Image (cartoon, rainbow, N blue to C red; front, side, top):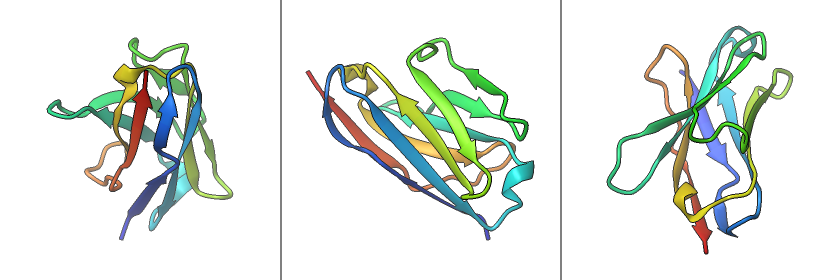
Length: 113
């Protein structure tokens, strides 16, 4: 079955950067698109970015210019580079196979001011 395992979260200070990873197994990775989402406490999951099988990225307006999504088809991993982090970026970050309900367990990011 499909498995997605996020990692790379942690406690950082405002202004710092963080790179999240999502290791994927159980699917033909190179043919699929992937997305990152964020869920703040008490809120719904918010879409942040998508990368297509052709490596075409798409970003939510709320994070455009501060995040970069990428992928490594050999390692079967998807990444989310986040720069100039703000306390408002605090939340649990999830990756997902686009077009499915396959989610990872999430990785917690806490940005202190």
